[in-house]
Length: 151
Image 1: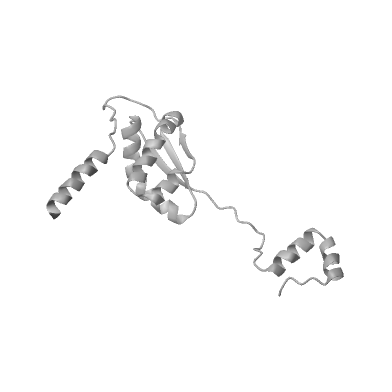
Image 2 (image 1 turned 180 degrees about the vertical axis):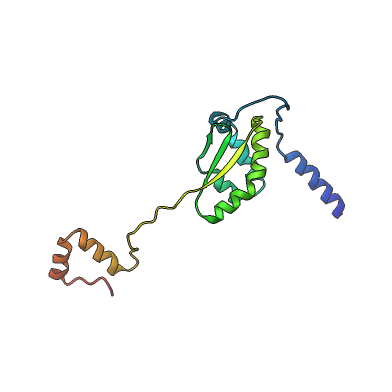
């Protein structure tokens, strides 16, 4: 029974696999932003079908194509940078397969996160003090009505 079930699953998996149009070799196509944008959905679908969510998160960001077929992946943090470096080879193959481009380079650029210098307002007292600095009338209301933020 296990062998029959396994064979049935394999045949159903083969039917589900996507059909890919392969461009013939020998055609010289330069990779441009427009050509890449036409096929990015197919590339994302490939990673989605492979349950590669980390790679998919990188592909969901804006991807730029420079002259000479250089694809620039902008990542945030070292973890995304490591994942992007691991997926380079597969991504190059997919881009060549879908677009027919003969020269594809992938570079990974680390984008810095903009840090907010404002302190986090966790407690009710912190929130009230922040609002009191913004609106001085709250200090008068607090004195007049004897308001307390902490219970």
